[in-house]
Length: 420
Length: 149
Image 1: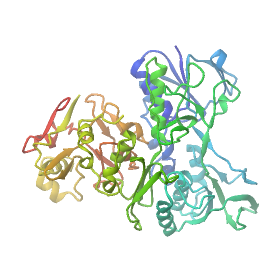
Image 2: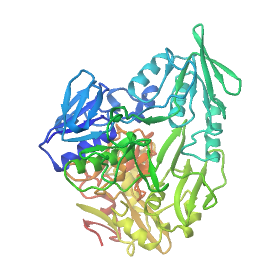
Image 3: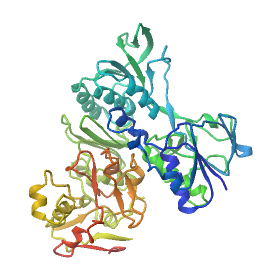
Image 4: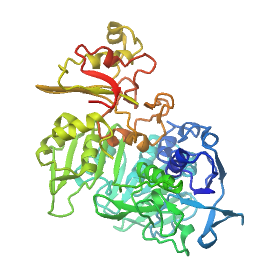
């Protein structure tokens, strides 16, 4: 039995750790196009600001592959899967056979149609190599345009600003952090970043990037032009699914997976940012590109690859993020999509805001800005989908505790392992 | 695996568990007075007393079999100690992103105010014998045992 995992980040590591819970003997091969020991992708923003170096951003200790008896092929790209032969074709023409395969190739940058958006001094911010390239050019006194005001865009913008680069952020949406935050919360973030000197062009988009001597000019849809030294395209990630194209593996936005994280082809699994699975709040399949889900999906896939019956219960978005000391957590649906949802919030202050979104009495989303403590109690309620109608005042207070929960839920949580 | 359980009916909300937890995780683990008087910033207790009279109880990490925090940790700082089975946080690797705090349904992980950007959580006082909160509870409201009530 040969296990092969394509990818070397959270989902891959989750699978390795899980396989070895059940199967300590059969070989595991990890193949990744990145030449590095497994590292934490989210830490690239810490690398950019100098808070972490290559050594200290490793996702698992140095002896990980030895300890888990994993063979690696790092710096090798898988070009295609040949499902009928159970083989992988590598970029050096080598052919690798597998019995159980996990595709954990993650995401790749979404590149919007911008004229002139290729060539030198145009960067992305997904991988360690991207951060290394940016660290080189992020010299004090330089200027940057970041296209995209989401999680990746704002983390790179913050990192550049901390390197004393003048930063302008452009986003098509009228608000920042569109995918994880409501308009009120986003406004607090924008004001915080503006105070640090960041500039914004929101509700418009970059149309063209023209070279102008050593510099560039970014032309916006609203007619404005921004001169800059370099550009970071950080509009978002899309599933990196090239290796399943032209196969019988079913693909929608991401690789379609079932509750075992299995794809439509027997013996082939997918997990992490490349996979789509059930979103328990939206009630439909979605790609939720966050690290905790990737690890958990990888764990479930690994168990099933090793012959267990493990079920992925579905996921939802949850994020913890901070900018210049403003820290926040958000989860689920943060803006009511229609009148079947209700919103309740605290009075927004300059640096504090708490909000919940409720549907049919159940918690489906929350925002807590500078009120991070014990926020997981809300995450638990969101997972359990119990009626919280009587708890709403507590849910938007800073002082949430288990004591606020109904007795049965409280007792269960005090015992532990109550929320799966 | 043994876990610490709160017995609501015996807890009087005195918060001595919090006090001893802070002390034992300070530079002066065996000296309450020095821990509070000499520490620049007293460590955040890793146990939290919740109180709404007449109900009170003390709550700390559940050291779950399926730990949400460990799965969610973006750096790999959160790990299971192989010997004890406890879920521990490696402060060197923790960046204080707070993802574990939003992941933990028990509210058992805290921001450590004595260090910059690191979380604090129950470590069973592994290097101190029995947990300080259990040892010092004056009313036997915290017990360490298999299974719980």
